[in-house]
Amino acid sequence: MKNGILTVISAGNDGPGRSTISNFSPWSLSVAASTIDRKFSTKVQLGNNKIYEGVSINTFDLKNKTYPMIYGGDAANTTSTSTISSRSCFPNSLDKNLVKGKIVLCDTILANGIGALLAGAAGTVARDQDSNIDYSSLFPLPASCFNLVDGRNIFEYVNSTSAPTATIFRSSEVNDSLAPYIISFSSRGPNPITPEIIKPDISAPGVHILAAWSSISPVSEIPGDNRFVTFNIISGTSMSCPHVSGAAAYVKSFHPTWSPAAIQSALMTTAAPMSSGINMEAEFAYGSGHLDPLKAANPGLVYDANETDYINFLCGQGYSTRLIQLLSKDNSTCPEDTNGTVSELNYPSFGLSTSPLKSFSRTFKRTVTNVGSPTAVYRANLSFPKGTLKIMVNPDVLSFTSVGQKLSFEVIVEATIMDKAMVSGALVWDDGEHKVRSPIVVFI
Image 1 (tube, rainbow, N blue to C red):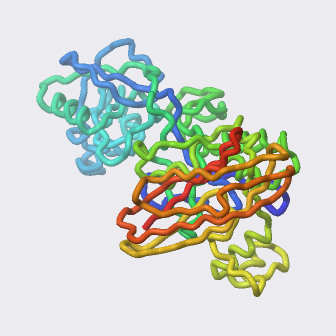
Image 2: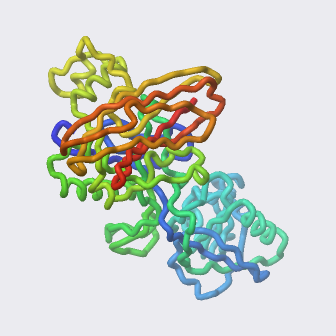
Image 3: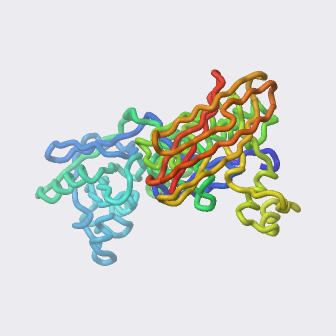
């Protein structure tokens, strides 16, 4: 940041639990992973001719050939493990003599097909009981994963049939009409160190992404998988992060003198709003919303910040001079006349942490810089659930007369009782051409 470089970092893949986000410094841009409108399904046909549609990315072609089927719990390698491990098909938990050449049914996808592969299975079917299966994974052998309902039906078939059989088809592409939404594995906020700095900042495509791949690594990364490609289909916040990095470079190509904070602001305030109906964690899942690179190149206004602003912020968080200098690698000290409160950091979002059933009032101070038309009048628009909070913006009209001009305002948030775990809305500065949107999140 000190050298004019914006650091874009992955939020992490430890979701959907609360405060699982890994990267959350305010001088960097944290990226969540959202879906695209393409997903993959893999059908399994049982010997009773019933077909169930699971998820995986399966390129293996069994040519409609059926194979005997066995439950991992009935095929334990009794010399080294128990039926508990074999139910999950963990490595070396299965009896090769019982599993070889068969499709093995497992109670979880956590083994990634490794145990089935090592035992010589023809394929594997997983009924997921512990993890979310809202995206498709790669396996080193034919595989498909199912939810509890379909998984139970398959389990009952295997256990009620004297000679169960099945085949696994190649994956097919399916349209996901709900996209974009945040995938389960994407790490969530709130920020574990400074909850009122809303993290993640933004979301971008991170599921089923076509990505360059080392040609010496197997497709599934598992030894024994003999498929080698130069492009693979990968999911993770490490896929969403480069989308935003590229967009940041795109914005900088138009505005080479902009600071990292200005570019971060442009990306955040032009992001497309997302639905809390799909992601109940709302901004703690998707931040300001879904990346829109085209709009980010012309944001209208930016919330700028520099090294001094971040130093003051750290001072307000209780960092000593020694710790400040360990971070800054210089002689930075805390000024005597600064409060350095979170609400005064010129951040493109607003966060307020409170206690349940407690009245509160908080004033946020912000400054925006005009990077759009030389003469522009922006009006403040607030969107919030009725009857939850009282929010005032002062002034609620900003009149600019030149590019680069800075104007300040305050956002005052009040409530008598906070009986919900989280309430969120947005402040939008609108001049008729630009809509500069910042989320406002109040939470317990």
